[in-house]
Amino acid sequence: MALVQYDGAALDDSVAEATARHYAALLGTAAADPDLPLSRLPAPGTDLGPGSGAAGASAPSDDAPATGDAPATGDAPAEQVAATGRHAAAAHAPAPGGTGTAAGRPDDPREHPAVRALRAHPRVADATVVHPAEGPPLAFAVLRGGVGPARAELLGLLRRSLAPESVPATVTLLDALPRAADGTVDRSRLPGLPVPSAPSGPRADAVTEGFTALLGLVPSPDDDFFALGGHSLVAVQLAERLRTGLALPLTGLDVLQARTPRALTALLDGRAAEQAAAKAEAAAKSATRPGRPRGARAGTVLVTGATGGVGAFVLRELAARGRPVLALARPESAHLLAAEGVDVVEGDLTDPDGLRDAVGSADAIVHAASTFTRPEVDLAAMEAMTAAWRRGPFVFVSSVDAYGRPEGERVAEESPSYGPLSPYGKAKLDCEALLLRAAGTEGRGGAGAVRSPIVWGAHDRLREQLRWGAIGRLYQAARDGGPIELPRPGTGGHPWYGVAWVHAAALARAVADCLDRPVHGVANACSGHVSWLDLARDLTELLGTRAEFREVDATPRDLDHHWHYDSARLAAPLRARPGEERRTVLAAMIDGMSDGAG
Image (tube, rainbow, N blue to C red):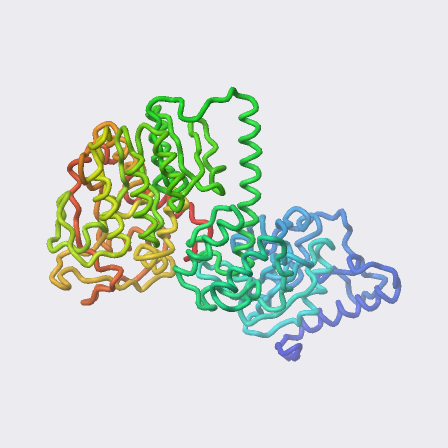
């Protein structure tokens, strides 16, 4: 059997003959009718008949039905590329801005028709189509073994077999499609995509000015925060600068997640739109119901940190118990609390006068807010609040970090603290001392400090744990398929390494119970304890990945945790309810991740 070399690939006689015959038919058809559109030229596989030329060639009719889905294996003859007809193209056009690979299956109805047509070609191993923010769609293809038709031939094939609106502007040949960790096509690594214009407007200007002021460099729209020298403290500073300057909710974690000026500007634009919509909805509701003076209801509970992960669950629990709530929120976040039964007072931990006024108008207090990174602000806020506190109970949501690093493996409630304490743990301990000294004096009610470990729950703020810290480290390793190194039991003389955790709903019940029955001291709030190995297994199973677990005779600093915290004083409200099991809450947190990435 003779072989003919064609564009670097060896073709046998039959294929070469069919190619030559089809090319002759194209030339004959074009010569006979120069005004014939490309879409009417004969497609590969048209039965031309022996010796046919222009007279014997017939283009398929627009009304002819498609012959079926193109095979996914690439072993079908080239003629079947034409099976993806115009009607199928119109039915399967993807949404603007997406990629043509959809879920990565050739038979997925969401897939761009050009992807289906390209993959049906016997020499094409993989393909995708992307829709840039600006400009027409672009196709990318990978040839089997790196040899096959030229990109112009593939583009011509698409023009003949697809509706005009489904034909990409170009076809670019690649050695392989760049893939992200989750297997989807990584658009950022595809060549030749047009660069979108730089964001503009007051929010874009504020972001650029913030990057410049704090990092000392004028960034381009797609410069990475970390590559410019950013870190967590700078992220908090940038978030505070933008939050106060633009009056929009923003956290340091938002900055760390967005990373580029373009992404951060888009995030702020979205929150500005949400804020405007929420304010309009709240105004419409207030116009249809009678006004009610704030603080007129007996038993009002002031809740700080109401827009955070813990605060949101506390609000839900108090509402279920029929308790009137006064929520402290920054002006830029107040719209997030426009719910029935919740009054909002604007303020934050840096505003002592606002804190004193809020405390003075409430009959009970739940203090769940924290800066996490500015202990001096946390302490000053507690001083202002305890000074204004004159009646009712006061519950402070503290942390097991206030215990420091105890000598034993089990930690009883109200055990003494052991150094070294983290700045966060020291601030919690000092705030507890201020509160407990003031309790019961000058008409004040009882007080309790509820020390919680890591809090899990279906809330965006709580899901951030899957991106940062020890939990984030395990999650990202599990997502990427490992390997995952964990301290071996017995390392350093400790028989167990792991973490204590509490479900946010259980913590909220414990806090609400303390309003009715103050603990008059310190109480722990733990739902359970899980070893690092069991947690890593949970994460890999929930993510559907396979990872290698390696137990090593070393303890990374962020995994050096080996304590169990007794929680007898609040055992009743902490008792797990259906849906609060460890794997259930982890699954809910993973399912709500916006990008699945760290």
